[in-house]
Structure formats: C-alpha cells, structure tokens
Image (cartoon, rainbow, N blue to C red; front, side):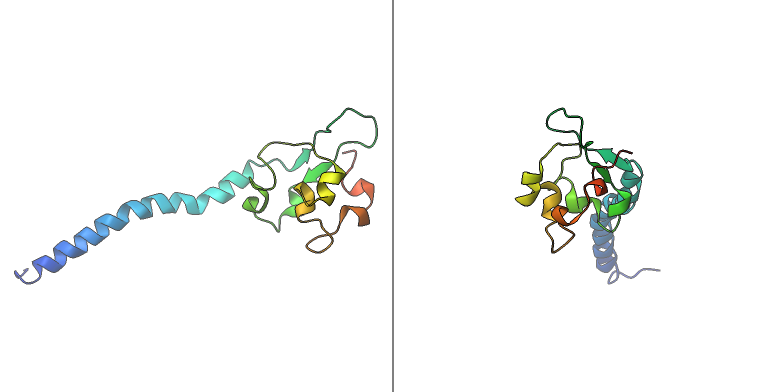
Length: 121
C-alpha cells in the first residue's frame, strides 16, 4: 500500500527512469557497433598509385598487421574510408602512413625493406 508521502518519491523515480531510458536505448547498440563494423573492413587494401607505373607494385595495406590500433586511430582523420594514393614525400612530411611511421611511434619507411609495403600479393 502506498502512502501519500511516498507518491512524490515514486513520481520522481519514474521521471528519472524515463529520462535515462532513451539514453540506454541509444547507447546499447553503440557498444556492439565497432566489432560489427570491423568485420566488414577488408583485410588487405591495395593503395592506388598516383601515376601508372610498372615497378614497384602499389603498396598493400594490411588491417591485420595493424590490429593493435583501433579503427578511429586512422579513420577518418588520417585516412578516409576509401583507398587513397600518396607519395613517400607525403609520408616524410608526417601525412598518411607517416603520421605513425615516423621512426618514433613505428618504424620509419626509410628503415624498412620496400617489399614490406610494396608486396606483390
């Protein structure tokens, strides 16, 4: 049985629950969105060359090799969600791969073998 003194408390509790309900409804799907979206990411992405050439083959980016990073580490800030061509000069200036591969956060491209990125497969 409720007393008249408990009614205001129930009304306030109901209002608080009602205000938070829509936030929970929106937040729960977001908790599961990153794994679902990551499943759709291609494992390897062939970066398009800026100009046609026979050698070296265009660079191949492996999402698997960078799995310690989160998608939002690079997308959309460093890279858009589409393959984008760029040059070694761009990387030396700290853009694209060079934003991490600067010799401090990750190996600099100049210290790696060409085949590490310009892989035929």
